[in-house]
Image 1: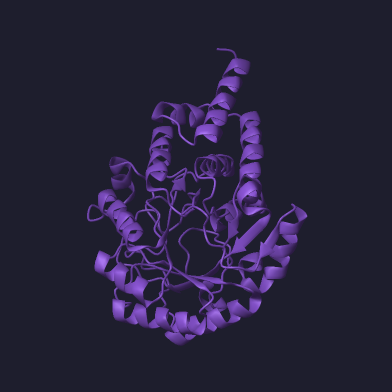
Image 2: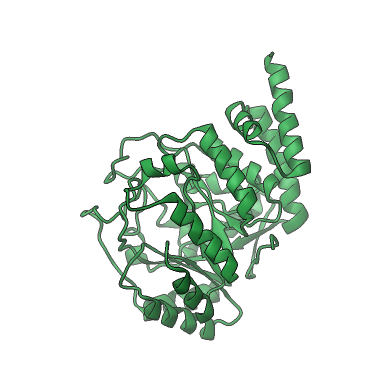
Length: 355
């Protein structure tokens, strides 16, 4: 097959995805493995059109509050893993969290994302207390949780306290690949069970995966895409793998902007109405990463509302953006950057249309 014929075949697969919203596993593998720069540009044009069809030129902002970096898990890629004794641990008080929400609301945020490690100190009672306080104080806002794997009963209690959305990346669908990234006590099947539990309860659910994780193959990414099609989540968060110096994967090569953008475009065609962030990790490895993400089909950015003194302590990977645009105080700068590429920051909850 000539390069020109291969190009046409890849574009034909992109067209098929755009029209039918489904591909077979072998087609996913071929599309990912044989991608070219020209095919990527073709994909991004289609992804932008689909995104604008459903969401216009709005970019939704989420106020990220990283409220604890204690974690019981020991994921091999994560800087706040339990065994990293160099991590400076912290927890925010309820008052600290509410102060972040106050500041965020004044800036125009209508979604707060409470993100943290799996910290046993934050029992259901303590978390429900925080959530209900936010719900009572900001009734027009969405509350998103990203606090890992919990029991279905726990998820139910947090939902009843006022949480609307839950983010839990499946990380990788393939069980063998998952076991190479996590200690034996963690399982891919349990993580996926959590996602189905969250959906059944009524949360708007977000999942996702790392791009360029150690040992990842095009077949792994194909399985991730097939899982997204089955789960049909309201949000998908993907970002490049970025190594952390205090982990077993400190010297592993990082994920690329190029493949991350390509996967963003594919997800936009697979799930046209999904909420799709241009992640902090993308902005970490490329100064224009988030703009490129928006132009590849993304429609969400997540600036940091955490207190300045703890931002650098929530270091899940090296060189994470902790100042500049990632600080919510620089929201005007972020607005300017989005306007330069023809998009604008929306002051709204920005609920998913993928329901």
